[in-house]
Length: 328
Image 1: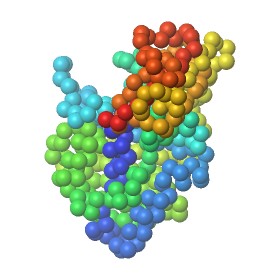
Image 2: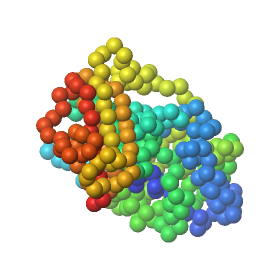
Image 3: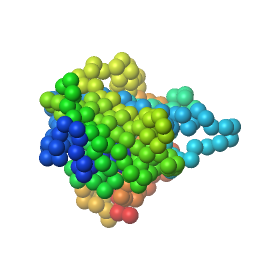
């Protein structure tokens, strides 16, 4: 999922400055796009709002899935094609993310609560400790990390850029190369000749994005293939409180959990950057340790890292794990 999100977040809002819109010249268009980029960084959105909610629609994949014959599979380029983020609710304190197979409640302290689903049924409840180098509670951001990824002047052309009724509209068309990249790396489906047009709508005063719609314009009638709608200062949904209450229930037996990555007490050669995540877990629930994708690791039961983990945890007792990483 992380790989999909990295691709999604880095190129999902791409615009070219090669041509100007109806009401704005090229200089004005450049200024608008720069302001939109800055205004929609997560850190800025959450300084100005109590919450930011993203709703994602993917009618392209839904239609392809619905039309499958018995025994057929999607012509996807990634297993994440049908497991895209459909909803993300972000606050300064946590993020709540939904996909088809997982619901996350992620916190800045590198701890997440996780529901996993199989065939539409809840299968596991997991406390998830993350030691990823670039960990953030937010799995969906409205703009890419780097401003240089904000537009692609080689494969996309601005068709219109104008202000109307307090909103700025930026409409752009991709060429075949840009459209192929969008279908295969964003939606994760094999390219079939679609030509993608994008319309971004943002507030004319704050430059905060309201929606981005991707349409296939290769046929006579344009068809929406992907859309993100953004809402600000929306109250949290009841499912968030219910999930938090489940994992933080004070009336059930708790296990003390300690994860230490690269402990200073280790006698095993590894990184010297010690990192600790500790929490209380409901008895019977699963726990997971997530290292960074750039390392391999070994797990031990003692701080000196001399006793390798063997067997499985019983989910009923306190647990300590000491992990030594090694660059791949």
